[in-house]
Length: 54
Image (cartoon, rainbow, N blue to C red; front, side):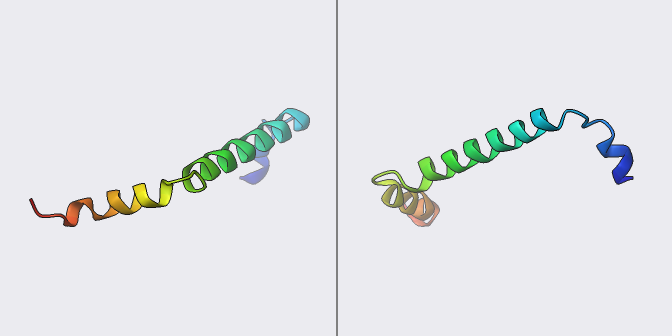
């Protein structure tokens, strides 16, 4: 099963490049989400939003 799936990935440099791009983009999105100034306060407000009674 694994051999059948991997036989289509013959261009190893392009596959490796795509994996590296994915890792950097994913890491960038995580950093942008959690390391921005004021993001902790914003996410705490959003987490408590369902608990607020109006």
